Image 1 (cartoon, rainbow, N blue to C red):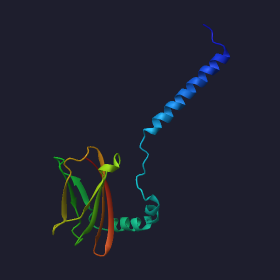
Image 2: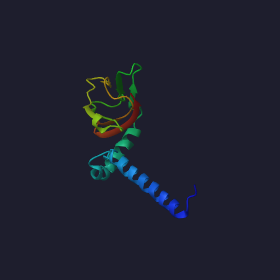
Image 3: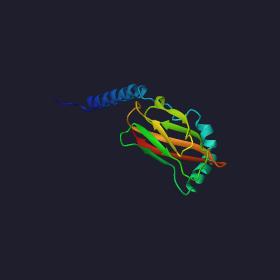
Image 4: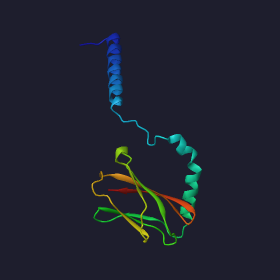
Length: 146
C-alpha cells in the first residue's frame, strides 16, 4: 500500500491532535497547588529570614537534627550556649502538603527535644526550626528521610 503526501499530512496532524488532547487531559489530574499560600508575604520577609540564618552560623555549636536508628523519633539537640529556647518546629512534606504539621519547642530544662514520628508518611521531610534565644532569632532547616 502506498501513502501519498496528503494522507501522510493528515496522519501526522491526527497524531499531533491526539497527543495534544492526551496531554491536556493528563494535566488536569496534576496537583499544581502552591508550596506556600502567602508566597508574596514570604518574599517580603526574606531579609528577616536571612538574619536568622546569619545568627545561626555565628553560633559555636550547631543545632543537631537527627533521626534515631529505629526511626521512631527525631531528636533536636540545641547548642549549650543558648538558654530558654522558644519557638516552632515545622515538619514539611514536599510531596504532600496535607501531611505538614507544626510543634512548639519544649525542651523542659534540657537542651534536647524528642519528637515521635511514628505513623508519618514515609519519604523525604524537611524539619524547619525557627526559634529565639538570648534576644536573637535563629533558623535551621534540614532534610530527613523517614
